Image 1 (tube, rainbow over the protein chains, first blue to last red):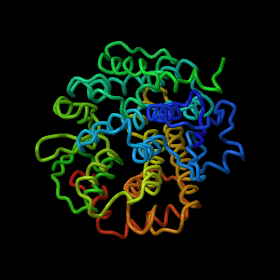
Image 2 (cartoon, each protein chain N blue to C red):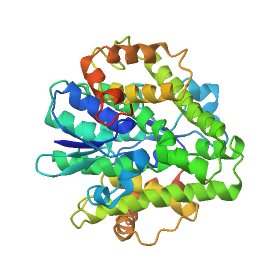
Image 3 (cartoon, each protein chain N blue to C red):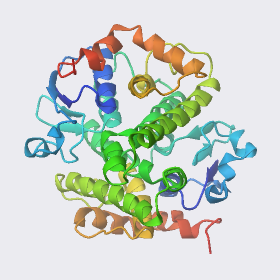
Length: 213
Length: 213
């Protein structure tokens, strides 16, 4: 398999974690978002939406959208399951993952930040306040969800799930933008538990071939 | 079942469609977002994230996040399946749904528009331009995805899926904000095919008990 991705892309990072948790090898293909490589003809020929990540299967089939890719990987490679076995728990884990993927991350994409600066003429500080506002608001809602659940090592239960694959990149980004992370005990405990695992270490941006020095 | 929702909420509308497609009866509970009812104590006691929709099962269990709710309904009530039977097709349908739920809709939520106006001091026209920009950009990417697929009546194949449950509310919103919809032949054909079905008619905002006159 080939993963078209970018070291700092949060959605790319999610899929790298899933691949690492399942021990699936892949070729890392860098699409440098900050240099605009995703908008060039070469990538447009591969990707209908011009986004990363894009997973190319051995037969050439290409899959987009990080959550859909991870669900596919989980169906095809059930070991180290990313979703619990029972339907209600599965719904909880998906909801946690979507609380990040649908409520926080879309507002803080590189293209959204660029639009704020270039089209809305937002100052650097207003842009950063926007960023931190949505991350903090979203993580507080995430924490309230965890607080209603039974005790767990990770976001759900005692093994990392789809929710952890989404949480870790979001915390990484939060820290880059100096978002306050106090008062989120369950969330940060899950994050710490993840980062103690080799799979999460191997997938992190600083370990990527295209990482900025 | 009880569905806590709001007639104009795009994510609520998705779940109403899914319930209607499966012929599942439910009690409609209005949470009036424009009046701020989702931020009041009564709703906060029910919902950890303060968002709609929220589906309450007969035993009192409450599920959040529209995509997670629809996947749960599809697992528990397999008739009128929202996802195809094979893994690759399932991945495509999920990716289409997420192209709307993760790339378009989060940028145009009521709370985001309010932040633009109140915190970023965006003028009405700049706010509407923002709205139309993300909807149009997202729908063009959606159309490119459909254009790469085999011919189909709906977004995928000849029956409505999770992707159609997301597309129809997005088009409804696009029209409310006068977003140009020309040049999207596959997308609009799928939309029209959906709106010809009684389930989509029954779920639409104007048919809701809390619809504005």
